[in-house]
Length: 131
Image 1: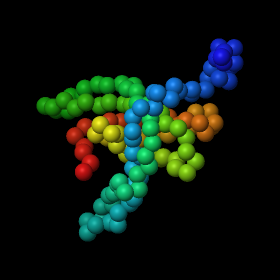
Image 2: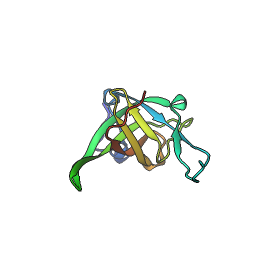
Image 3: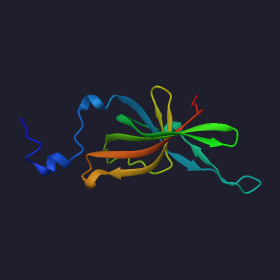
């Protein structure tokens, strides 16, 4: 039996019970489209290049904001997945979960640079659906 309290390296590591990685996710990269007639450049997400893995999803904050006459929910989530050197996500990529939720990645953290787990700080997108 490993004693985590007497070993400071193990106590600080982002050790995760494998059963906690129970959400199937797809991390979807994007490309930049060519400018249109008015000069606007848009991000085009490419679901055919999605990276699939298992992750742990935790809610960090959830609040309702009043925008004029309507309320909008803003949710911030922390998504933890195993590190894969073949695919490193970046900010502004999107995550699609198996139950249909969509998130935008705001920040990517490699815990202490150990290349074991990555922590993705994300914002939930309301009313976005992928076909």
